[in-house]
Every structure is written in C-alpha cells, then in structure tokens.
Image 1 (tube, helix red, strand yellow):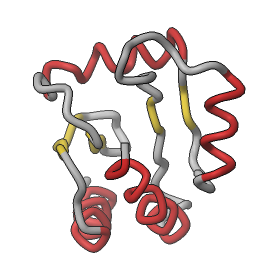
Image 2: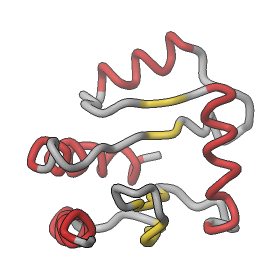
Image 3: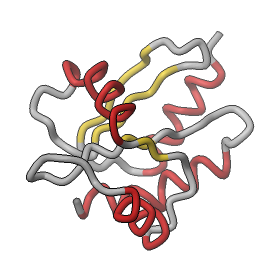
Length: 113
C-alpha cells in the first residue's frame, strides 16, 4: 500500500541510527486479495523499495501476524508493534506515523530498564 511504502525510508533511517540497540522486522501479509506473495515478488519489492531490514513471509508471517492481530482488529496497514529488549509489548501504531515520533518512542523504549 502507498502508506506502507512511504514508511520504508523512515524505518530505514531509524534502523541505521539505532542499529546497535534496535531491529525492525517486517511481516509480509500478502496481497489484499488474499494468499501469499511469491518469493520472487517479495524479493522484487524489497529491491525496488530499498528495504534494509529483514522481512518474513509465508507461514512465519502468518504466525507473527496472528499473535498481534487482536491489536489491529480493523486490519489497517501500516501496522507497527514496538517491543522492548525483553520482548515485552510496549505499544502499537496504526497508519503512517512521523519518523521523529517513531524515533523518539523507540529511543525511549531502548532506555527503559
């Protein structure tokens, strides 16, 4: 979706600034019509949009999406979930968010003990 694509440069920037303390993991939810993207389609998307963070797809993506799906009952995307270093849920975001806001939230989460 266009908002998801628009978020990629912001996420790339945040990842490069916080790489030693933070990781982004994208979950491919497949096409809107349902089903899964092929490996070739996903690789083409990653290359075209210069995605610099890991992307999971297939059954792994379905499992991850199922875990956080109750937070996003509308199915809106982009949908981002922030976890701390201990793997505990911190918050979620629905829709496009400003890079500065995401950076500040992530930085604060990294500093949390």
